[in-house]
Image (cartoon, rainbow, N blue to C red):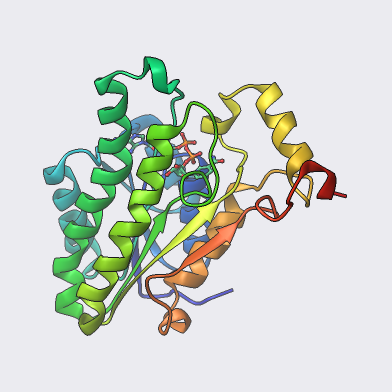
Length: 251
Ligand code: NAD
């Protein structure tokens, strides 16, 4: 377990799912965790559960992101870690996809990442230290799935954003990396239905979906002081899902 005492972490979308898994692991590693989420009830409940602090935040609003960062710094005096984790994944077939469908997904997943990371730069540059961890996906950068062309574009876009951003902040002691989850047992994924979940279990070499804390441990590593020489990189956490050349290759 990496040691994060005296460090403050903001986790967006931290009320539920993967964000909650990340927030829990960072808290156990000693960080003061600020959960930023649009869902106040779940956010407050998770903050109480892990001993963190809740701030209401809609990542599609730049002012909300700035205010959440300011509140974290004002309350705890510093901000070392930001996990830009918020994401939504409603399905829409390309032929029927509306401009609104596209904008909602891109605004939350990609613009929300931009707003969150940009807001974190001011305190991190002042401290000359920062660890930013983006939650991307295998869907988009590596794989595809019908109904998720907008989602896949947003998740691949996050990685393109990350690579240039990592160069811009490298002189300030700030690293930016991404985790790429496969299929993780969260409320968002369970909403896809049992048939989808069963299909995924069958194609994953380790034959089970990830737990949110599996992603928390990966994020905790990239957020640690020890990961200081890693920037602009991704860590796939998928139980081997992208390895098989065909379903027959899964034992
Ligand atoms: P989830 O739906 O379980 O949780 C998402 C959280 O984000 C919720 O607490 C929700 O209230 C919050 N949220 C939604 N819109 C918001 C907004 N505008 N501002 C602030 N908070 C907002 O989802 P999850 O499965 O935990 O997914 C989290 C991240 O992981 C996403 O970026 C998603 O793309 C990525 N991901 C998930 C999976 C998976 O299998 N679950 C796989 C790959 C990548």
